[in-house]
Length: 146
Image (cartoon, one colour):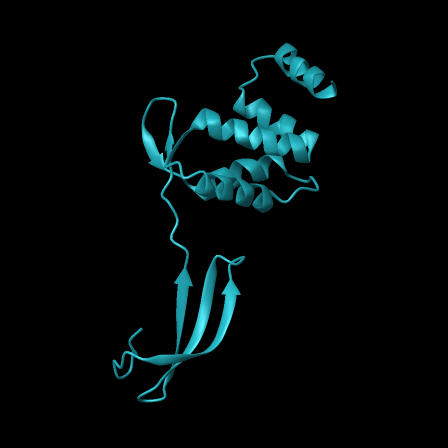
């Protein structure tokens, strides 16, 4: 790491801290030549994941889109949507897959919500499965009861 002031290549680490839930490290460094202090960040490089949509097109996985859908399902429920999305994102990164279909992603979300909160699950399922009428909705509620 080169000093941003004098360009010297060697420095010593004065302080290290984990940030962003342990995915990054912030380091305070001191240049061994000019003694100026500066901050560096180390970030874990992640795999880019593409979502294959129903029409066959691909787009880059967008955490905010997933969080938005989960947050709507969890509205006024004792569930942290960030926690669910973090789990899903972590599983996707650890799977070493670089593509996932919207159907697979939707099923993962429904599984996580079903484990966590029945009301949030039904809310998400009603949009995801596009319930056409009350009978379809009641069938899903019957499955949930069992």
